[in-house]
Amino acid sequence: MPSRCVSSKFWRRRLQAACAAVAGLLALVAAGNDAAARSGRSERPVETVQSRSAGDPIMAIVSLHNQRITVYDAKGWILRAPVSSGTKGRETPAGIFSIIQKVEEHYSNLYDDAFMPHMQRITWSGIALHGGVLPGRPASHGCVRLPYDFAERLFGETKIGMRVIVAPTDVAPVEIAHPLLFQPKPGAVALAAARAAEAQEAAKKAANVKLAVATASREVTAATAPMRTVENLKLKAAAQLAAAEAALGSAKSAEEKEQAESAKAQAAAKLAEMQTQWEAAKADLQQKLDAVASAREAAAAAEAARYLAAEAARKIARELQPMSVLISRKTQKLYVRQAFEAVFESPVTIADPDRPIGTHVFTAAERTSDDHLRWNVVSLLSSKHAETAAAHDRARASSSRDLEPAPTDLNAAKAALDRITIAQDALDRITAIAPRSSLIVTDEPLSAETGKGTEFVVLLSGEPQGGIKKRRRSTPSEFRYPYPRGTPFWRSPFGGPFQSW
View (cartoon, rainbow, N blue to C red):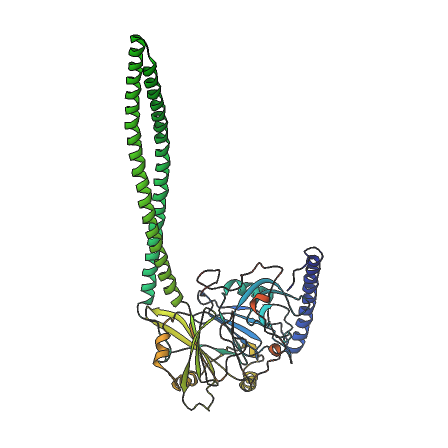
């Protein structure tokens, strides 16, 4: 986006924001009246779990059918709120995404600089979660609108990389155990802690040695001045001796010769004294110079050790970053990504490959021991199931939004895993498994949205995708924002402000 004039454009934006706020308020009032007329009650409020302390969110599930978002930590749901997704022809695409950028004050690149506060991008083609007006029905151009207060709260809770699942139906994760679900290498956490401690100790040693070099250098400076003073006195004494010898050579009388010899003797004694002092000062200075050289060698060695220890710690830390694995029945391949970058891909065997396997998201929710992770699974059902669920909902309640999300079918998820065989060489390379790592099993291929600056993106082919088909995928570098007060765009977690899990 080209740069904007700060004066007129700034006030124009502020005016637009004010107008949008007023329009939003009027729309909310109108929507509330409309909803009250249709349902006899106001819009469903934001909910927060009260029975326990909430942990860090690990995923958010947006139900297109229920127009609701539910946020989960490792133990279960922690936040819920109504949403407004894309309208017909601009539908929010159902699929698997993650948060790839956060901007606190964002103005649309596509729709007349529309204000989208607390924007959390999930595709580079412009699909995002953000605060907006909720009329009680799908109303956006493809984004997921959230209540303004909820959007602000969620913005403060989430981190770059958090999984966002847009599901046709409302479904909840359930705990699962299966031999195919990866477990961490035993001792990985302890090894990482040991490497971190070694790096810290090496850094401390390097700092101390640098301090010793500075101290030795100051001592050299302090010793140089006295030596130069003695050296000047020595030169002066030598000049006096030369003068006395000249006077002795030109003396004519016995008295003059006696005085010249006395002066020569005094000058020679002074020169000898200065020579002794100069040699002592020189020896002291040389000792201090040798100490500086030794300290510098020690500093170089300590710095090299610090670098190696830091690299070892970073390597282990990288291995403890969440890893994502995707298995596609469409391509018969396994793909691995970590920290938004492709790691490798490999062929995979799926039994009965012509039969659908579904789309399932397995997530390592939390570590239960040094070498064991607890997993859960979310299975995405098609909109056909949503129609069945809607009929069931109408039989149970006046509004489907009052119902708990349906738990994932555990047997179906296990059956999907039972059909998969991963080659041993690929398994040997999938060792960096940490909490929030994931395994995605799907009938779909990788979406073209998967690429630089993204996690895996999977779109459900049998669902409307109008909100994304009408957009051009841009690269992260093409986005510029006049109010970059939010979290900066993702960079590598090993040298930048990436908010790691």
